[in-house]
Structure formats: C-alpha cells, structure tokens
Length: 356
Image 1: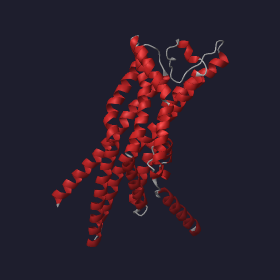
Image 2: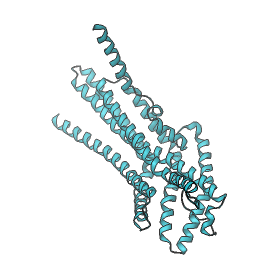
Image 3: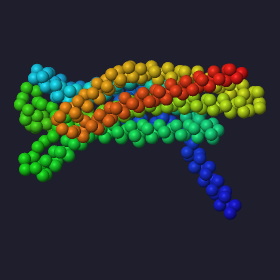
Image 4: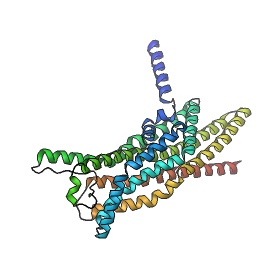
C-alpha cells in the first residue's frame, strides 16, 4: 500500500510537471508557427531577404490570375453585369489582402519578433512560479491553442479549400458519371477576349487551376497565422496582467516586509513590461485593424448578395460568409477582452487606493 501510494504520488508529480511546463512559442503553438513560416511571415532576421524575394516571386506568379480577373471585371462593367463583378470582388479582395498582410508583417517584423521574444521570456519565467500561478497560465495556453489551432484554423481551411475541393470533385464526378463530361474551375474565370467556352481549353484551364489552387493554399497559411497571432498576443497580454496581480496578491499575504517590497517592485517592473507589450501589439497590428472593419463588412455584404441574388444556393460562398463573420468577430472579441481586463485592474487599483 505504501509502495502504491508513493508510485501514485510520483505519477501525479510527473503529470503536473508535464501539464504546467511552458515551452517556447514555436513549440507551444506549432501550427501557428508553421503557417507563419510557410506563409512567409515568421519574423526571423536570418531569412528577411529570402522572405522578401519569395513574397515578390509569389506575387509575380499570381499576376495572370489577378490581371485576368481585373480584365473580366472591366468587361462585366461594360455589360453592366453587377453579379459577376461582385463575384470576382469577393475572391480577389481577400486574395490581395493576403499579400498585403505578408508585406505588412515584413514591414513590422521587428515589432512582431519583440512580441514573440517577450512571450518566450514570460513562458520561461512561468516555469518557476507557484502551482496556482502556473495553473492559470496553463489554462490560458490551452484556451489559446483551442481557439487558434482547433477552431479558427480548421474554419479557415474548410472555407477556403471548399473552392478547389468542389472543383476537383465536380470535375471527377462529371468525367466518371456524365455522358458529356464538364470541367469546373476553382473560380470561374473567362479567358480574356475569347468566347466563354474557351476557358476550358488546355492549357489555359490547367494553368489557371494550378495557380488558383496555389493561391488558396497561400490564403489558408496567411489567414490562419496572421489573425491567429493577433489572438495569441491579446490573450497573452491578459495573462501577463493576471499573473503579476496574483504575484502581488501573494506578496500581501506574506508577513515579511522584505518579501512584500520585492513583490511590489516585481509588480511595477511587470506593469512596465506589460505597457510595452500592449504598445507593441498596437504598433504591429494597427494598420490591419484599421482596415479590417470596412473591408470585411464589404466582403460580408458582397457574399450575402451573391447568396441571395437568386442564382441558387452555393455552399462555397456560404462557408466563406461564415468565415468572414467570424473573421471580424474574433479580433473585436479579443480586443474587448483586453480592454475589459485593463478596466477591471484599473478599478481594482482605485479601490485599493481608497482603502489605503
């Protein structure tokens, strides 16, 4: 019985150590770090030049798709074909937005690296904290992983990859079961200055299909990593405030004046680091946050028009609409949570001053 008790205690200690051990950013959030890297946005100074070259090469590779869509939009405008103009705009808008965020992350690479370095520094220090503080930090990390890698990332992947997926399935089923096989494009796009049926001719169809498929992959990496990173940073800011408040609370429980003084000094230092961290978040993401509200509202309106304009239900655009709504909801929710945390701590600080 004594042996079993010691064995269970050792197993519990090992389980607790594993559960409350904090690792660096790229190990804690593997999928976000991977998509940042594959999306050419991970702020590694050693790869700055390579990333810039690859971003330019990717944008150059996608020029045929962009130019052909713009030409077709102009031809639709001449015919007053508003439906197809909106249909093209719902695709090219987010697609160009992906490259805009790539360039934006390159421009803000120093600030983003400082954010990740600060997160790594915090996680390293959390390993030395008391159990109740580590439990709070572990709960925040688990929630961040759940929201970014298990909810947001699959939603983005399903919504975007539905376009090439439907095209592939539709083409295969048509060639297997239909008497007159038909091809389906990822995004239906006419061949410039040719009859509509010319868009299915080889090698135009195959080339556009591969380019659009590559564009879908780029968008998945981009929207998963960039928007996921903003959520991680705002949640970590809330965690930083929670931890240093818990540490201060523990200090007030101590009967040693020296311990209380040490905790007060630690609280002041961490407040300064938190202020710097919040300023970095705002600096790194302010341009994107300034454009997301208007652009996403236009996107949602365009998608709803496409769905409700009487051209039939389209699962791809319905999924894309849901993803767009979530895309505007999550940053607002994360920012509101951060603001609410700051307001709560400010009220607590004012209350403590009155009591003193």
